Length: 328
Image (tube, rainbow, N blue to C red; front, side, top):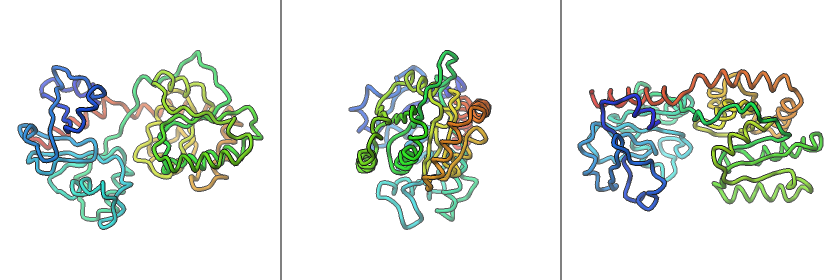
């Protein structure tokens, strides 16, 4: 998004604002450029930011004492159940949402609806939905041949529902004896990962059919998408669901849970299942693996669907918010 903002807006100056605690991760930060410099600040030391026309908090946190126009992007609402029930680390996010002077952006219409449902006195007009996109790096590789493999891409956390996907694979593995299940993603919840491993280790022969890739670069990931018969994202909760677009861009048939946000993002370019029902997931896998016509149909519809999303569009819509809140 940063790269596209710089292409779109040659008039304004932009700064990436980092808390002092990020200095130890300096090598992994966005590169400094003449058009996008860095500003360092602290939670109680916002003086370096005061001359900005607007501040955009993309990590669901804002420096509340900063007296300039502010925008916050809300990626999901997992930590806020209602006005009185929220995780301790979501207090800042909650306070930003309740501040009428703050403009709100969300990644999906689903998250906007959750904000309005859980925090009843927020004006809908304060919330702008701006979809994300996937990098153009994700593409169809014509020379890749499909392999007998199912792909999961994402962090390993309970909301991603990987355990039920593994259970569903266990149901169908004797029917599809050559098919492997590739899990690509880091462990986000160790306890949940161990629960998955206990299940796998309790099923003779299952571990040999599952491959774990906890870190791959983009080139390897593009190849995995292109080679897989299907990609599965059986989440019980998502804020957006970027692997849906990545898979579709690579010509990989997508199997998603039927939760609202994945239907919003995947549209007609995906097959859907009940994330709470192992049999529903297993039947959807079998339906997709067993029907080449359906695979081809989803590939074509997926490639059509991703035309709705681009980082240029995302950047343009954010620049419009910046100009609106700053009065420029």
